Image (tube, rainbow, N blue to C red):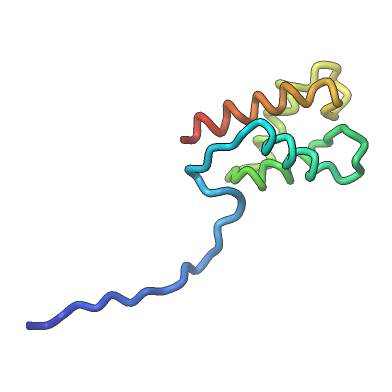
Amino acid sequence: MPVFIPIVREPEFKLKGLPQNIAMTEKQVREILMKAGRNRDGSLSKGELEKAFKEFGSRMPCWRASCCLRKVDTNRDGKISREEIDFVVNYVLAWLESKN
């Protein structure tokens, strides 16, 4: 009787960002957002938000950053200020929760 032996191969591509089923805390989200801030001025530009959403595992980080910026940027200066970071954290946590 023939025996089937599966060939185990490495995936052809590497997944970027976080695994799909990971639960994040508020502190971890804040650390990733602060790490994404290139100039360390406490505010986040759209590009820095894109970098953070890549880290969070978004399939479309540019679109996700634009949506976040539209919802959270209350003073419409095109950046997320220190006062608006709390809203971004809540947005990210709600988005991650909806993914799982």
